Length: 72
Image (cartoon, rainbow, N blue to C red; front, top):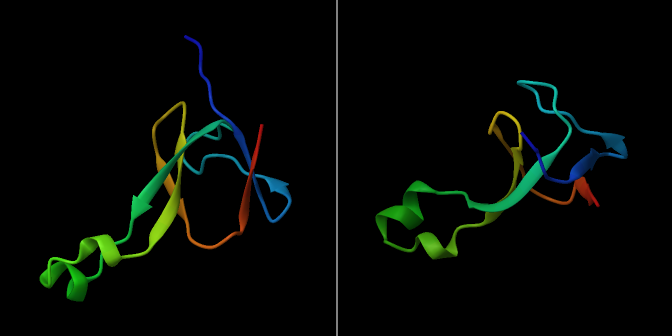
Protein backbone atom coordinates (compact mmCIF):
# COMPACT_ATOMS: atom_id res chain seq x y z
CA UNK A 1 0.00 0.00 0.00
CA UNK A 2 1.36 3.41 -0.95
CA UNK A 3 0.72 6.18 1.54
CA UNK A 4 1.01 9.74 0.28
CA UNK A 5 0.81 13.05 2.02
CA UNK A 6 2.96 15.86 3.35
CA UNK A 7 4.95 16.35 6.51
CA UNK A 8 3.88 18.94 9.08
CA UNK A 9 6.02 20.89 11.51
CA UNK A 10 4.53 22.28 14.72
CA UNK A 11 6.56 25.15 16.21
CA UNK A 12 9.49 24.00 14.04
CA UNK A 13 9.36 20.37 15.25
CA UNK A 14 8.16 17.46 13.07
CA UNK A 15 4.58 16.54 13.98
CA UNK A 16 3.45 12.90 14.20
CA UNK A 17 -0.05 11.47 14.48
CA UNK A 18 -1.13 11.19 18.12
CA UNK A 19 -2.86 7.87 17.38
CA UNK A 20 -0.48 5.84 15.20
CA UNK A 21 2.76 7.88 15.11
CA UNK A 22 2.75 8.32 11.31
CA UNK A 23 4.33 11.48 9.86
CA UNK A 24 2.41 12.07 6.61
CA UNK A 25 -0.84 14.03 6.45
CA UNK A 26 -3.48 15.27 4.04
CA UNK A 27 -4.75 18.85 4.37
CA UNK A 28 -8.44 19.77 4.50
CA UNK A 29 -10.34 22.88 5.61
CA UNK A 30 -12.74 22.19 8.49
CA UNK A 31 -15.56 24.55 9.47
CA UNK A 32 -15.87 25.14 13.21
CA UNK A 33 -19.51 25.45 14.23
CA UNK A 34 -20.97 27.78 16.84
CA UNK A 35 -24.43 27.40 18.32
CA UNK A 36 -25.51 30.99 17.58
CA UNK A 37 -24.62 31.06 13.90
CA UNK A 38 -25.98 27.54 13.37
CA UNK A 39 -29.28 28.57 14.98
CA UNK A 40 -29.48 31.53 12.60
CA UNK A 41 -28.55 29.29 9.62
CA UNK A 42 -25.37 31.31 9.07
CA UNK A 43 -22.83 28.49 9.31
CA UNK A 44 -20.87 29.92 6.39
CA UNK A 45 -19.79 32.80 8.69
CA UNK A 46 -18.03 30.45 11.11
CA UNK A 47 -14.23 30.35 11.17
CA UNK A 48 -12.26 27.50 9.66
CA UNK A 49 -9.50 25.32 11.07
CA UNK A 50 -6.83 23.51 9.12
CA UNK A 51 -7.53 19.79 9.19
CA UNK A 52 -4.38 17.67 9.34
CA UNK A 53 -5.58 14.15 8.47
CA UNK A 54 -3.24 11.20 9.06
CA UNK A 55 -2.72 9.40 5.76
CA UNK A 56 -2.32 6.06 7.59
CA UNK A 57 -5.13 5.86 10.18
CA UNK A 58 -7.34 8.80 9.13
CA UNK A 59 -7.36 10.55 12.52
CA UNK A 60 -8.16 14.26 12.14
CA UNK A 61 -6.02 16.78 13.99
CA UNK A 62 -7.28 20.39 13.87
CA UNK A 63 -5.18 23.53 14.08
CA UNK A 64 -6.51 27.08 14.29
CA UNK A 65 -4.04 29.87 13.70
CA UNK A 66 -0.67 29.60 12.06
CA UNK A 67 1.14 27.30 14.49
CA UNK A 68 1.90 24.61 11.93
CA UNK A 69 3.73 24.53 8.61
CA UNK A 70 3.27 22.14 5.69
CA UNK A 71 6.55 20.69 4.41
CA UNK A 72 6.67 19.33 0.84
